[in-house]
Image (cartoon, rainbow, N blue to C red; front, side, top):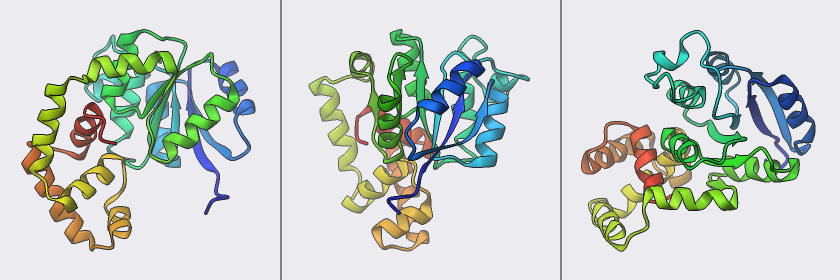
Amino acid sequence: MADTPVRVVIVDDHSIFRSGLRADLDASIEVVGEAADAAAAIEVIEATRPDVVLLDVHLPAGRGAAGAVGTAPDAGGGEAVIRGASPAVPTTRFLALSVSDAAEDVVRVIRAGARGYITKGSSGAEVSRAVHAVAGGDAVFSPRLAGFVLDAFGAAVGETAATSDELDRLSAREQEVMRLIARGYAYKEVAAELFISMKTVESHVSAVLRKLQLSSRYELTAWATERRLL
């Protein structure tokens, strides 16, 4: 329903910032949980299953969370949250909200699976619009950060041709399924969207992963994000 609020979890190690952000968000956004470190965030996300997680990039890991999900100790807890929570709650999308505008931070968190990255200098209205956009399946970046992403993931003609060759391996229906799965749709949601059975969805996903030589839907999301197919 159009009136259904977007359910959000705020993850930041500063309680004052969390309180201020909660107060500044649009009334159409419902904050269903908060966390101050990566381990607590993973627990809250799995318990509340939000639509969007507003996530600080530089975050304490908390109780060994970074190592538990295979994230480098110096990478920052933001990656640990994404990699730790995404397999359990694949429909949740992550929007990085950080004071950092460093290219390496932007690229790293997008590679981990975030759908967007905006800075903490953004207004409450700007953050609210970004939350709605990410919840709707779009990718969102602060204007000056978009260039980092384009540079990192490449916009060369040769890469575009390579992507076309890869897509040519997939049938039209497989491409439809691929894009929906990469955007975070559950198999049941894909089936409803395309008016096919879940078994058919599973068959198409298996074919897509095999043809693209990928091993999971999370690798598929990263693959599609790098090629700007979402």
